[in-house]
Image 1: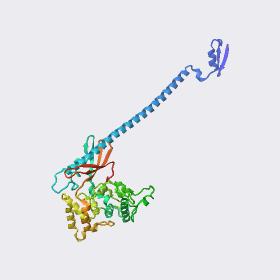
Image 2: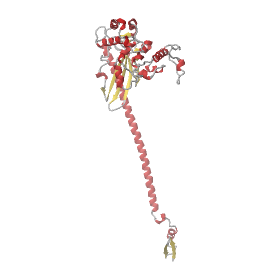
Image 3: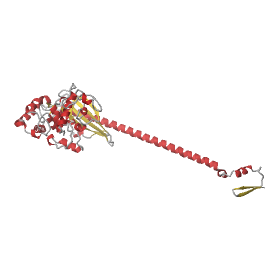
Image 4: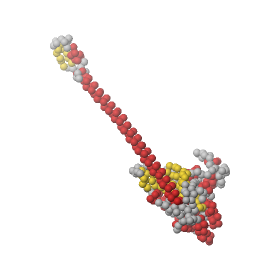
Length: 406
């Protein structure tokens, strides 16, 4: 009989070593994993479980990534569809504005009258046709501005530009002179600058150099390249929309602008008009830029509210009737403004600078899809190239997300 001592325990084996050799192997190697014959099988099952769990986690990550990607693509596709719908709604608004202008041109008018006489006509003031007009799954809103009611930038004189700047809130006479001279230098064909103007020598010295155009302006934004001009002076910095609406509703002689507060001159300038101002639709700022005093501008505006103006002679007769006695009202012009022109100058220049008809209009249309935050804006210049009674509307400009003033 053989005696074995393992870990302080004694085993007695009565049979021969040859009959059960595996027992001797187990007893001679008493490791933990050899005490249970099924341990290897359980280890394999645990490993398989871990592999399965890792595989499931990997597949879960792939599924979540795929789901997120598909949701993103679906949202992008939805936004693209809504943006396309909004664009076509805005496009419909532009064509509706063209139809309104054609209808105004084709309306029956008394002899001697022309359409677009005043801003309360249907082409301009027609909520049913212009404000939140339903169409399909959304709506569009349209605003129409008479480009002939603005100062033509191509032919604006120094005094006209200075008056516009002054009435918009620019009270620094040196700054006014710098901007005016620089505008004229930008337009003229030579490379000689005025006293306070600028030509290539100034613009090439800037951090981002460029040359003076020496040609007419093509867009209002081009004014931002001119020496002295800033976005605040061009487009205004009145803060809240309520404050801006308040100032725009007032006449130039009534405004009380704060220091450094500008209403902006872009709204009163045009690069698309015929070159003359329609006194029947011009604002008080534009009328005073033409050289009228505050009293004369107010008289013209009041005359327009009484009914359509038949011809320019009615305006000159009105100005003549109130221009005596040194043109009363001149004293209300704010300090720093060049002031009005003489009575003789105004009456002599009106036939050249003013008109009583309009042929060019700026249209801004906004399209919206119901239930979506996306909007699309289109700005277009519509020009009537037809004859009296046979209008022909042509599109001179088409831009997306335009700024105020086209």
